[in-house]
Every structure is written in C-alpha cells, then in structure tokens.
Length: 106
Image 1: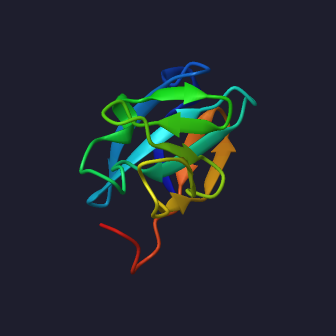
Image 2: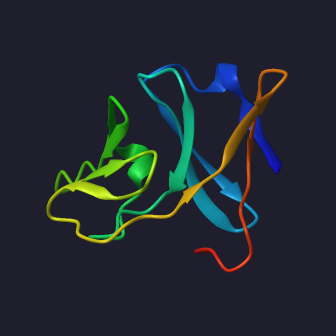
C-alpha cells in the first residue's frame, strides 16, 4: 500500500489525480462517503477521468459522458464498453493508501 494523500485533500464528491508508481489514478470521495481509486483514463477515449463528475458511486467522463462504477470499474453508460481498472483503498489515521499490483495498467 502506498500513501497517496490525506482524506482532507479529497472533499466528498470530488476527485484528485495521483501518480502512484507511474500509474495515473483518480482518487474519488464518493457520495456514499467511501474513497475509491480508479485508473485515471476513460476506456473510450484517452481522457483523464479525474476531470469528470462524481454521481453517487459513479464517475462520468466529461468528454462523451461515459460513466464508470467506482466499485468495479465497469462502464454504466455509453459510449465506453470496456472496464477500467480499480485499485484497493485503505484509510489509516486520516490518510488514503492505494495498492497498485504488478501487471496492472501503468
């Protein structure tokens, strides 16, 4: 697990982008009050998902409106049809930690 930032750096309903060992990851504080980590690139176009909008437990790409479930990375709205990688998140003492495994998208 790698420390990314403080929970205070990601207000509810917001997203921050982080480079974790060479992998761009969007850290999301969803409306269910949980934190999620998802690969920071739309599977439809090479657009940063961290620039999108949080709605419930989904993240919407600003360019074409593709939506991704933050829990699974599965697309829940077209035009995207391919899943985006998601990463395990843990909170310890107010800090956000993310696990990037070998072999995952970099």
